[in-house]
Length: 489
Ligand code: BLA
Image 1 (cartoon, helix red, strand yellow):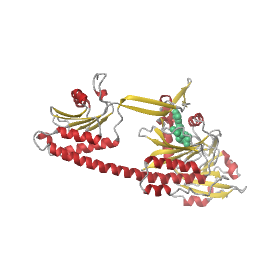
Image 2 (cartoon, rainbow, N blue to C red):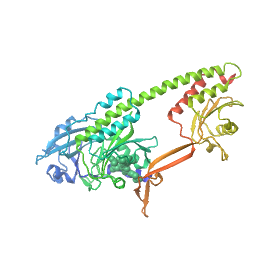
Image 3 (cartoon, rainbow, N blue to C red):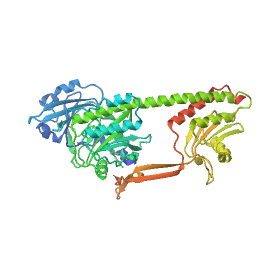
Image 4 (cartoon, rainbow, N blue to C red):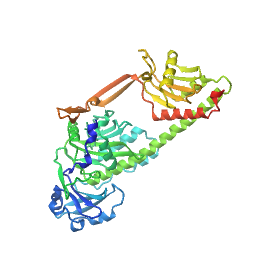
């Protein structure tokens, strides 16, 4: 896994052959780097470009340079015909102390039509009747109608960067990957960073030969901000193993974070025109902001419910402590309702109150011992409490534990919200333990070669506690701390 992170993708020194590359020094305006294939686009040998001031190149659209915003990564697109009368795109990109220029031919198929559904995402979502899945399917369906790729997928990252295809649309209406998970190593962090920083990544052909970039001082240009950057050999093999020869990926950024990717696949070489790419990038950006608003709305709904739950609990606690003999059973009962769980134990001094499955009672002493011995945090979420218990019996029935501790005094209240083991099935695209293969003695890394559905079922853990569960637990602790010295009664 670590080896995948070592490849310096932005320093490959090469580009894909569907365009030409120039790097211009920002302070001197000199061309410090140029790709060897520039003659195919601008009819000049690369030797005549290298070291020249950009002002000496009559075919260069200088206006784009002065209009480029100062923001790192910002881009401008200009069109100018070459001597043969072919329209060329000049993509001017603000990079670190440099301007990157990428030249591509306009495709004959370049569309002038816009996504007719462009604003539909924001319009329909304003009606408020869309589910999360409606958002996902709408995006993949629209892109599948517009672009010639034979498969369009929306890929969502989990916190650990494992990913899942949450929606898939294809020309033949067959889904291959919907609902399948992919290990984090399929897209190393170094690659994710590049996808976060750029509006899209296109690989028109995994069969094409990369083109060298030459430089004045034999230095390698930083291709962090480049659409042409050559493709990592590991990834070329990965795509071949998937029977894919062309791909387009577009980052889905929600609330400033890389939430997922649109991944388009084609079995043969395919290059979509710059305008189609740009329009799709804008569609995805419009999806991201509508979807971001949807998520914020859902959170708000959850918060309202949580507030109501917390006020009820607050009342229950006040009631519980209204007389000298605090009614911990009321506390356990209301927390059990809040979490819809199988059991809640509340400990204070020597007392314990339990609400839930009666067969769990005999394990409470062990539970309290484990909590006191091992868990130092105020709120701790555990998926398998047995890890904290010395030699748990084979039939130990409890797994998940969300522990809330008022304080570390013996007299403080400790609440443990409990879950039983459940059957969790993960469907992977290929065995994740074999996501990378080592080849021969030189230890070269190769991606896995099977993406066939591989199911993994575990019946011995509980699902991890969500961020919202933990947030709720923290709120409960705040309510307990707000009570007037319950422990002193
Ligand atoms: C890049 N890996 C990628 C990209 C995707 C995936 C989407 C972005 C590049 C692109 O547009 O194709 C993975 N593609 C997927 C997944 C799906 C998909 C999960 O369609 C699901 C449907 N890959 C490996 C291993 C390594 C690795 C073991 O499997 C590391 C050694 C590396 N993946 C890797 C690298 C890149 C990459 C280096 C960057 C490629 C580049 O931009 O040059």
